[in-house]
Image 1 (tube, rainbow, N blue to C red):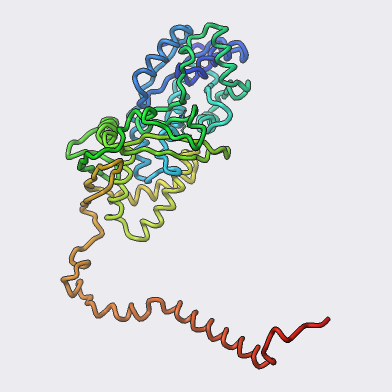
Image 2: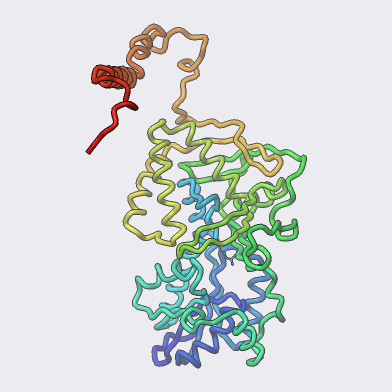
Length: 422
Ligand code: ARG
């Protein structure tokens, strides 16, 4: 740990070791005049190689880089999203959910280290700049986005890196731009920018091609939070990793999407998210059992809005607090177990049980005549009223039409012969 001296102007940079954040290091010193850049890499479940890359690059740059583990916290955020059945245009929001967590950790680390500014390497075209800054601009820190502010392109960055002998992996930053965390692996760029391009199996890493194999899984929830798989309790990180593996083997959780970004750009995205798909589908199946019809339909609107805010990274909006109050009350009853079948790229519920089931087998059965003191015959009155207003409206409107055509007929009838003269 470095001493907390405020005599040097320090900036904390969201550092991944990729091209964008690597070129940001010298630029923050030279173009923005900071005495010291400190890297912060937040662990939200990226693959091991990414930490190695970050470490190697930091070392070569002489950058002090702090790696902070936020996996448990992020898993909790993913589960909050499950409780809100959250997807955006079919995407379970992996990158979107991670950004505020990362931004918050960087802010706290920067405060501990006596920094006066925060920087990220996001471009001016994407969503991430907005998500980072939605969190950071609530603090007193200066916010810097060198790539956006200096109008950098990837080509310029590659040349600059070569000139300065900066440690970036020689050109094979990869064909695709990939963002991986516990909840999803997102693949964009390269040939995928052509919406008609059909990607091959090689773009996938978490999912097998859907196959003949099938599997049954039991997911247990407590108040909407997933707590166990097949009866084995697991913490959030473990549970997500376990399901990513199990369901990924069946090709569960692939999404190919034309996504509408916040700034209005459409972008082709491919995602892998096996655990997210299993948990979201299972949780919805449990809600089907334990919520009333009206709770379910109102919750769909609440969930939709929650997901919109999550996509935008506006997670501290007062609205979200209100939405979460409803998500919390409804999830108080989402305790139970759902059996899922994994098959041919799909994860679907095939059984569910809960002590809160709003369900009476006796009431629904064809074999019983009464429910409490209600008998079948009591439904006759309901059946008579059912649709009463619609029938009334139809009758009144038909009569009005009949009257209107009778009047036309009485007026001398035949419309065609009555030519109007000025
Ligand atoms: N479009 C998604 C989002 O904004 C994911 C972006 C992930 N980034 C990437 N380089 N693949 O949440």
